[in-house]
Length: 455
Ligand code: ADP
Image 1 (cartoon, helix red, strand yellow):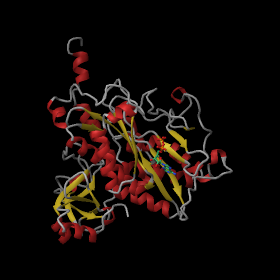
Image 2 (tube, helix red, strand yellow):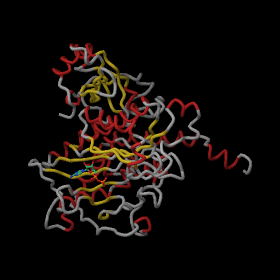
Image 3 (cartoon, helix red, strand yellow):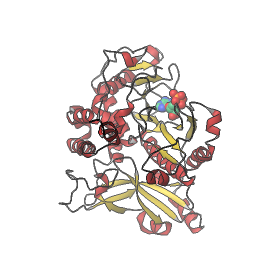
Image 4 (tube, rainbow, N blue to C red):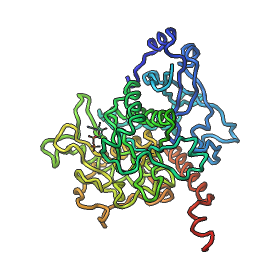
């Protein structure tokens, strides 16, 4: 069970007055929780079975704009409903909110009750099922990096996001002194998430002023994505409750490093063994691991959109910032796109370092499983490991440089079209196009400052 509350335990908690509200949520394209706050009694009386939402929720942008050009929904088709089907295995307490529980929902077609194919949770489930046909389960962990700021979200918005003050005055990578000063926010983050059934490993200071990292224990891929989404949401709510703000923008300042979401992955068999391990293989890697990694690497440029979905995401990929620019692998080397971790142990895994903190974990995990699977199917051979400062490697494949380039590679990807389906790829190409069109219309502070007097 992914959550920590059964429906019977919820009934008891409601009749005992402990719970009065059930957040009933889907995950949108941006990886956000969207839904309704049910009175717990009404949830138990009917909504536990299904409820409904407007189908624009999987065709909108961060602004909730009714973006045109999607085949799945439009003004013309009248923006109908989707079914929100609670996945009761995700029912859990929300300890940071009074009297509240939460459930995640699958998004179903209103008429057929089948999964909506471009729903992020459905996309991940589909790839997990493809791996299961081979007797394999993906065990995954996503790291969550973000910045904490002194000001609240409301203060930030009112000031036009100027003079942003990170919560610390210096690079706090692994610092205990500075992170002690942030325990007002970070201790409740760890403890509340833990009591919500999320296996928090630790938090730590990261390599910038005000930058934090939250690590959650690896778990089956769907749980991993659920944990990531709920944790990101919790960080924002807990920061807000403390009068602070937290940002998962991939890059909020040109002069500072950005925030990542590295994805750790290994494949396990039905006996609970990590099939990436082979004591006799080079670096302890099995043939399965080599082909899976080769697939991850070969198709990385085609799926990068799902790891870096906004214009801003691409500002993070800069030399000397720990964010990769090359799609090669290495052994315990943080300058490459892919890093072999846990060499010589049962925790042998590959870490993909391309994803930004702004990724949607369901999409990121789905496309990586698909790429690894393709590597297995094609029996790809892994190129030798890269070493040294890989930012300077001239022969290595490049991470796409812009959203425009990533969108182009996604659109033309036969691999993605085969794994996800044409309609799903076209849906996300439209999402990428919309981000590009909106940005192309924007007049930025940069342009004004550069050209106002001197142009
Ligand atoms: P680092 O110090 O490089 O950040 P950690 O030891 O903190 O590495 O581990 C990073 C993540 O890798 C953690 O979330 C951990 O649960 C996860 N992890 C450990 N073993 C595996 C595995 N076999 N498969 C997938 N993820 C794993």
